[in-house]
Length: 604
Image (cartoon, rainbow, N blue to C red; front, side, top):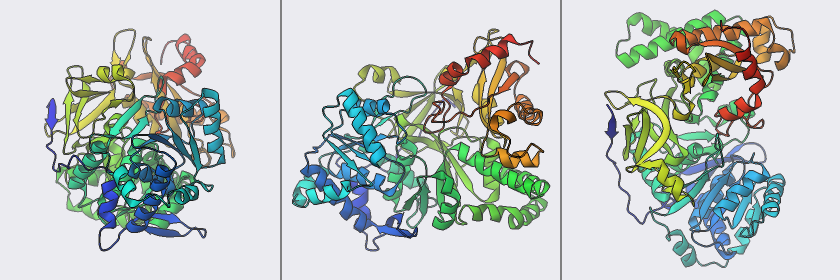
């Protein structure tokens, strides 16, 4: 199949916008809880739809009072927290356009986002963030920036007080000034290369995509009374879209800004569904493996893993034998229930995006009773173009298009997208917008294929395809995903463009190292730098590389690798906030390692 289009199940009126989702919930007789936040005693306290609506209106009136007009851009620079969503909806109620900024951004990055969007105001989480904003404004002469409000200070109270005299009629005029066709937010791509581009996402993108997603997920996943805990950055389109979707569907959202406390937050909040990028699921699996090995239960866990995967595959094929059912039941009581309880005990679904999960992990989690609904999308597509759904799932794929979306495979394998998910264009860059669309189809830059039932499989990134000096095309992700799944590995970057053979740069998982090292006889307290040179670690990485090599042809196999003594992180500049590797930056910063690989003796 080369093209599939799924008709929309819901068509929204052109006058509708995102704020109508809040009104929908606030008008319900049962007044559902839309959010939950921790109080001073660290206890979760629910925020009802009516409470949320009232506070959103109060802050929106404040924005109107200080001169924020319909269509003005307002920045948000904060970690994932309740107030992020609060001011996001307040901006929309005031008729303005929100501009997310990653809270880890440098002054120059902040200046670019605020300057390029011509923002008139910004919400900053703390004094540190406010200082960065003011430094950016001073250095770059951001004359349009008239206001900076601090979420941890008295900024919100100042706005609530300022808006007390604004009449309800003025607020309603601002709230209803935008319809489906108008821009709701400008999200700047985190960018693995070059300057970030401002993606103009409309109210239609959020409204119609949410309504059509609820048409297929609203009976099983995002149902009234369901709940999720948000730990991915709300500045990223994936978390942002799910946050809006939750309000639309009447699900409750909690927030945790620090994933170091994720396990305890999952256990206290008890979500029914979660969203994460593949690296989170890899770490959950690897941590469970290491824990089992450290307790002398490695063989039991390995058998439980094998059974979970076999059970999931057999279930997908509709052929689960009695022996497998009994074995699965035993491991469910011994192993799987403990894993589910570690995530709060109530999680039944997880939405995965931001990169390929891998078929093995997908089947493992499905087999333990946590169904991962892998999807695919970009900032430019408001997150999901396609997604697996509970009754229509094929593990190893990213699902079929959501209603209202379409996918087409170009002659060169590139994935093209069309529908309610696709952005209006790049802010102020009509030239880039024109380049990105062909005959009305958005060019994703990814390559993939559609099966006979319209399920999409991602096979790589078009710009990242490696062509060796002998002319062999290699998709690095096929090897990288498998190697990164090993417990001791953090990141893997496959190289070889215009080189005689394929090689890889590998980093060590610093968090996993102590437990892994203890189980494998390494010196207690060994550093990452020392571990990178240790024969035991090198042999383990070689094992991961060999397993990955067994899935590709000899010409595509990794002939050499080097373990570097530092990890790739967002702080180091080698990962985007959504945990994608900045390949060009890695090759630049580790050029001596690359040269050493190819100047060494012949590949093994």
